[in-house]
Length: 280
Figure 1: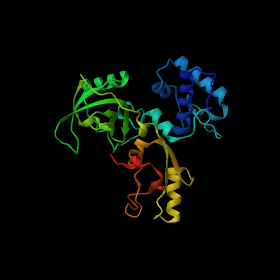
Figure 2: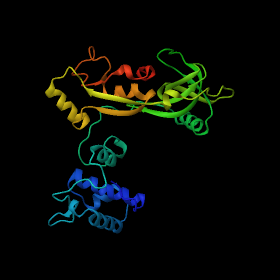
Figure 3: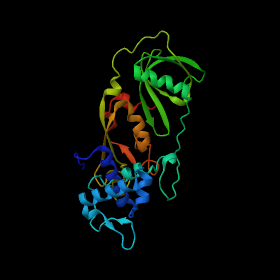
Figure 4: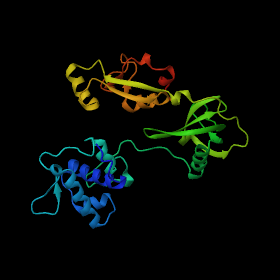
């Protein structure tokens, strides 16, 4: 739920009040201003505005200047998702994490690329021009030249890729940023031929609980991943389906990919376009 009458910045701050109240259970002006760099006077105005908007959601903690959620508090401006709170306090980003509780990361980002290289890639994407890469890959580990026309970045778990037209392969490909050894402006190049159909095609990826699990185990998995529904349906670019399958660790061949390593499986993978199942 949103209030379209509020300026965007004000709405974001009021959403922050709601998230901190609902998920942390206690909110002070100092904590609020740690998240949003506003003057204490503005903080007081924001608290007052939220109290007027959602009186059941906020109350004074007895004997303190802190606020706590009311006994009937519920999401009003937000959706009640943990992901919203995690994003607000930066749980997934150690460099901007704003929480006093201990958080450990097991999937750090591994992408390494020099700023001077990425600048040229960024410029090429912004201006729809080409660049020449010095590139290495598992299929060709020797450094070699590739002229590409990049058009988008892909964040795939711990890695970043660039989606681009490759003049060598005469098709659209993904290039791992960590495997780029050099970038130069392309002097002469053949521009992209045709649309990136696998990028533009949106397909439904339906994930279900692994059928090898017992009924009781499947109920647990459904509560964990699907909020109790029978499946999770993700609308995904066809070219990104393999990354999504990897991210959810979903079995494509449930007869071979078994629990407990695989708790989910792709429902009817044969219905997906062949390009969507090409692992990268």
